[in-house]
Length: 132
Image 1 (tube, rainbow, N blue to C red):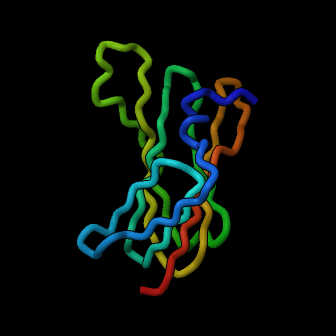
Image 2 (cartoon, rainbow, N blue to C red; image 1 turned 90 degrees about the vertical axis):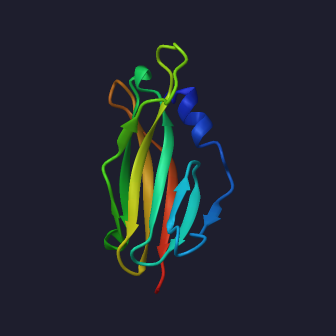
């Protein structure tokens, strides 16, 4: 399977980052590279934001495994680049909001689909929902 350079650059991190919200005043964290692991309590959120270039024909989607009821995942929303500086085909981002619902561990697998319909796994975000 051929994965575009944008996708490769996005998921090239091999170590797993563990992210925890810094304070109750700002409970949302943003993940931009996979693999990653996030620890949340019910009600907290994480935003998964991955580089996307729609002109390549590749699309992102997610699959949830593990304790699927521990989290809720929004439909991915594409955001065009803030400034393309006149460049056609500049990359934007696809953003998912993931909310902790109840204690458990879920894994959000990000899947790339090629213009021909071929699928491949591009990374995993593990979410551990702990007691508040």
